[in-house]
Image (cartoon, rainbow, N blue to C red; front, side, top):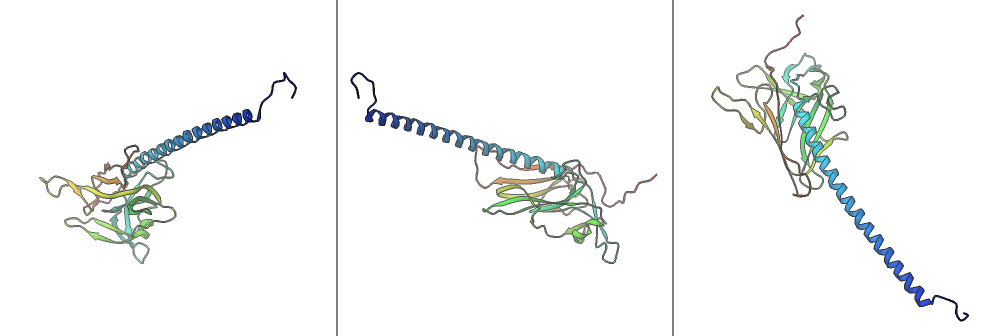
Length: 245
């Protein structure tokens, strides 16, 4: 190198490369931290939206209840036995609703199976199945018999056991418990109505309650909560309604 010409030594070049590498590493680490925080926030938002959506679906399905009937045994050599298409148990229920997952309030009435089943990672999950309601005779395929009730001629349908399948939709998962109860009219004139774990009365309940709690509590996320839906049904299950011109 000629005297008077500026230059860079090998040591200076190594120091510059090292500093540039450290700066690049710091930038990459900062980006990774930011992306991880964004991903975690997005996951929480999606989980919160899923919980809110499931709550709204449950409320809409319950509030859309239709006072429907089923002709149990129809198509098996007889006309069948007329029974109320509503079966309520502690772990699930059968009902007909005007709200469906696929078409919302715009579709036709659907037979709904709401059920609490064991989850894949412990706990329980709340699922729903939907089948088109084509009338009392068409619904007979899901009925295994009827049960009588005291002091009334109305009967309740006994439906086939609920099973999860490919079309089953999961409404809530990783629950510590999921219990159904039914607000039953007062048995006597001076008796108050009350919540019962199963439905064994004429017609339909005054309200349905689904109690849920998460398997693991996380204050930073929305948690599944109890859903209570009033049912405004004013139809007498003992009467047969017809259209008079």
